[in-house]
Image (cartoon, rainbow, N blue to C red; front, side, top):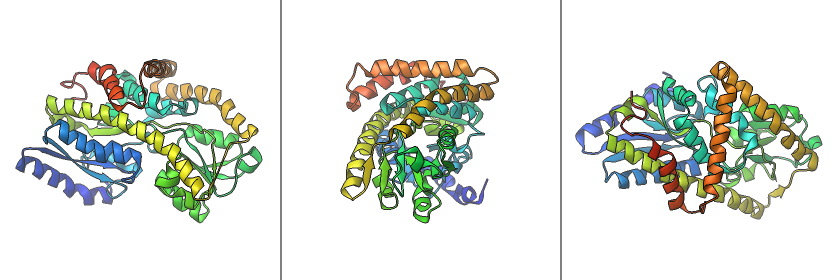
Length: 375
C-alpha cells in the first residue's frame, strides 16, 4: 500500500466506528472527478442522497470527490484495500489489471450514443461470465457503468486537417485512440484527464481528447482556444461504482437491493445530464471567444477508416485477454449494444423515470441481490 493510501487508512476505521455506534451503515464513496463533473455530481453527490432516501437513512455514504483521497490510477487499489468502500474505477488507467474491460473498450471508436452505451455496458458487465470473472479476480463488485459523450479535440491552435494534426502531441486515453493518433501522424500522450489543463497550459500537450463538457467544467477553454468536433470515441471501461467485495458481502440483501435501485436511477440521471452538459459547454465556450469547427474531410476520413481497424484490434486484444475467446466476447458485447439500441428506441431517452424502470427490468431485475457479487 502506498503512502497516500496508508495515510487514509484511518478514514476506514472512522467509517467502521460510525457503523457500530449508529443505526445506519456508513461508508466512504470516492470519485476522482471534481465535484461539479457529471460523473461526480450525479454519480456520487446526488447518488448519495438517493441512497439515503431509498434506505430511509439506513445507508449513509460519505462522498469524496477529486483526488483528495485517490488519484485515478489508485482507485482500484483503494477499493481493494478498503480505504474506500466504493469508487469509480477507470480501466484505461490500469490495463494490466483489467485486460478484458480494456479489450472491449477498443470498440470505443465504433459507437456514439452514450445513452445506449451506459446501459449496454452495465448489462454486459454484470452478465458476461468472462467480464464478471475479471471483477471477481480484482476483488470488486461491479454495480453500474459510466459513459462519456463522444470525445472531441481541444487544441491550442487550429487543428482541422491532417496537415495541421501532424506532429501534434495529443492527450489520449486507451490504446485504440493512441493507435489512431499515430496512424494520423500525431503523437499520443497517455495522461489522466486531471492533467489535461496543466499539459495544455505548459505546452507539453498541443491537444486533448475528452468530452465537450470539460471545456467549461475543467476550464479547458482558458488554455485550448480551438475545438474540433472530431469524434474520437467514447469511454465506459470499468465501473462507475466498484465496491469492495468484503463490504458488499457484509451488507444485507435489502441494502444491496437499495444500492441496485439507486444505481439504476443515478445512471439515468447522470447520462441525461452529461449529454446535455456537453452540448451546453460548446455554446458557453463560443460565448467566451473560443472557436468550434468541423473537421476537414481528410481528418474525418481517417477516423472513419480506423473503425474497422479498431474492431480487429478489439478482437485481438480480447483473444489475448481470454486465451482465444475474443470473438465470442466481442460478439456478446455488440449484441448487448444492439439490444439496448432497440430498447431505447421505444422510450423517451430524456425521461429519467422511464430509463430507470428499463434498467431495473432488464438489468437489476435479472439479478439476485442475495447472491450477486457475494463471496
